[in-house]
Every structure is written in C-alpha cells, then in structure tokens.
Image 1: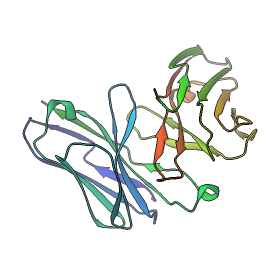
Image 2: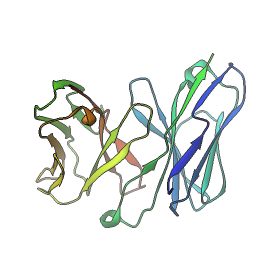
Image 3: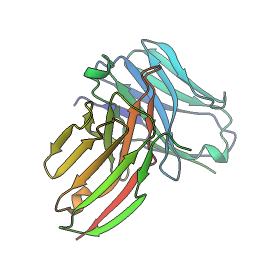
Image 4: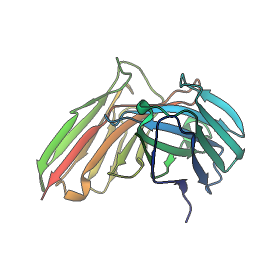
Length: 116
Length: 111
C-alpha cells in the first residue's frame, strides 16, 4: 500500500526521557513534515524537509530535532521530554509542483505521545 | 488572530439533515483545501479549489471557493453518520509552501 506510515502509534514515557518517532513514505514525494496537534485539535507545523534540506523550522524547542536519512524518511527525535510535549504528532508528505498541481498533503495516522 | 476562521466550531445534527460549514479569511489565496480527520487518524484531503467561484462536488459534499478567493464553504446534503469528523480548511503560502490550517469544525451526525 502506498502511504505515510509512522511508528509507534502510542508512546507513554516519563519526563526527562529521550524518544524518537519514525516516519516513512513510499509515495515518492519531495517533502516531508512533522505536525503537532494539541488538545484543541489545532495543527501546528514543526518541521519540513525537502530533498534532505530543512526548509521550514518553526520556533519549536531545540529539544526537538528532525532527522532524515533519505528522501523517504523523516524521523523526529525528542530530548528531555516535558509534560507539555504530550500531544499527537503527525508525519505528512507532499509533492509540490506549483499551485496548479498541488495535490495536498498525505498524513500518517499519528503518534499519541503521553509524558507522565 | 488566526489567518483562517472556521465556523461553527462544533455542529451536532441528525442523520438526513443538511449543513454548511465555513472557512473565512481577509486574505486572498491561490488555492484552498478541505480535509476531514476521523478520530485516531490523520487528516485526509477531500478537495482543492483554485478558481474564484469554483464549485466542486464529491458525492453529497459540495465545496465552493468564494469569488474573491478569500473564503470557502462546504455543504453536506442528507448527512450520514459516516460524515462525522473534524473538517479542516487549509491554504498554502506561496512564499514558503507552508500550509496554514484553520482550527476546524467538529461535526457529529447522530443516527
């Protein structure tokens, strides 16, 4: 199946731990993203990678770091987890060919991170 | 203030009723997208509208882009429980290709 897949689906961890969330897409897309969705369901962009180069880096804490070993993967590493990091994190990908050919983003199913 | 304002924030209606939700802005956009997000899943693209006044239909869903390309509406005819979800509108900033999201309309269709 062609898709964006992220693992794990659920992640419960203690404050201060370091964790990673993996994301892979087999759609041949140029760009991958990480989004955070808070309890009010608002989606906030965290990072995006285009051809292994960071092109968007919102003002997120530097405890969060994206790692892209190749065009099909964009992993999210989080150091020193805090209670406020609890949220659902979504990976997404897109193929940008200009406005006229913009087919939107394909999202993964999300990773629900709970920091206790 | 958010770039995109969606209304209503929450809507709960009976199966078979019609409804319209809105996505408004004071800015002009080259295109606008609607997504639906079901519980436990990521948003799924429903439609992209690019031309002022454009109307697109997806079965019982009708999407319209405002003439001035500042707003959009989504109309659902004879709503069904399967239409339940969070409906999100989004626009892409041509300057950096970043997608800007509305806060969404949570729709519940009761059997």
